Image (tube, rainbow, N blue to C red):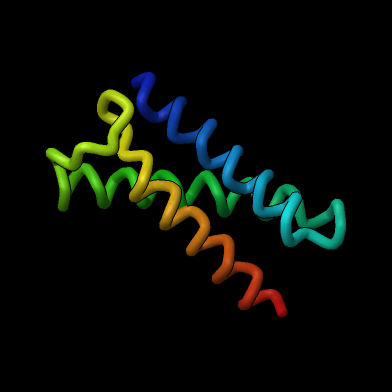
Length: 83
């Protein structure tokens, strides 16, 4: 497994835990937010590497901005779909 995907998973977990800290109401929501955060960040990183390969806000090969935006977008969508 490449190191970039490990970093993407860690950043997704970080986004999910921050979102749960800010918006979560119950401890049972935490695993869902963590999973959705990882999926969203991985999707954002993949989209950034395909559509914006030379974007300046990267950490090595990891597209931080795109991953973070899509991660929080996915988290918001998951919260909206649950309600």
